[in-house]
Length: 471
Image 1 (cartoon, rainbow, N blue to C red):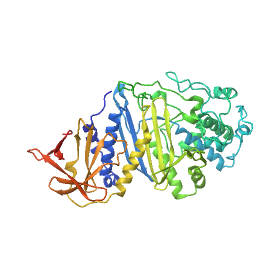
Image 2: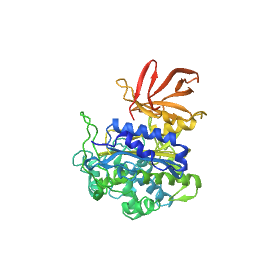
Image 3: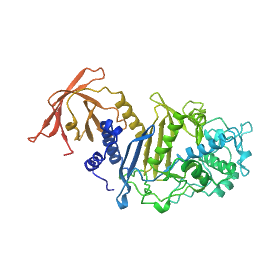
Image 4: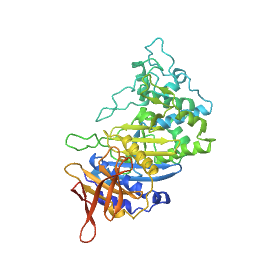
């Protein structure tokens, strides 16, 4: 699988004009570039697109690798991916819009709203299966509708009528409001409720009431098969034993689209994030009432073992002391995530055209770098840009990235699942630096060495030499 060389890619990214915010955070964003480029290479990801939102501005947007390796088509921030279960957030917003309009209640029973609902309740003492329980995955319904639709190569997703007919063959897995059980079937039924209560086909309702007002022109309730291999990226498998990833046939979620059928771009999901921050800041109503969105972001279900918490449609959890809301997506050949910090009004969106990888670790890694940069103290001193380089510590580690970080030098081993954990070095004199310990005392020395033309070629630490590999 061909890819852009790291040095070429970073050179191209460096040439992109910087906005005022990007100029302020240029050091931070170049570290993000280097980390993501290395992760894409070492995990053999075909393509990776990311965007970071601060309030109403996309402050960082990048793409790495290829959206269609067979045709060497480069991934961009406008590349379309399956967002799979992130679809559930749009279904949840549609439900809550109908709630705001007084057309349904959260404690309405599913059987009262859907005349075809005849799934057997096997627990005599169970409570009711309600809209609220569907939105929090605590309804006790089975995880999936009929058909083995996660099975390749055909991925036989059921039609809407097949979902309806299959209900009589199914029964509850648990009593309602007892355990968290993630359920694509449950969110599929919420899509049916949107259609039944509004009197408008699901796809039309989503487009008219959410996508069009937010100007999300590249978001659809389906996968645009006419764009496959062009603006729609080609999905790929989990990594095989020989280190390759194979193309996965395109799928359509059909009757399960309300739970898993949408496609989008990182820039479109950035608009979805901006809308939420805007509504939380301004109050009033934009698609939803602000109180309704806040309610969706609150925890409405906690599992008995305290391992899982969920809002109304949104995953809600704590990370490094902050409340994070969002959702992940995993469909044949694609992984994605959207992660929002409502208090700080920041969001990270990641899309990958491959299975078997975790986009959440990229979102968490980027958020960690933002947090570390924001908390770091600036140190006055010389311009350290000439020390930026990638070095080879082989055979011990893969790469070492050296970079300026608020007047100091950072050294980050690549690849890394936690890029905000790196060593910092204070400039002493000339090409001499010393490691800053956690207690701010100085540790071992690092001295950089230059060639006859004055360009830095390697550094010396503990008497050993580590050479530069990007010339």
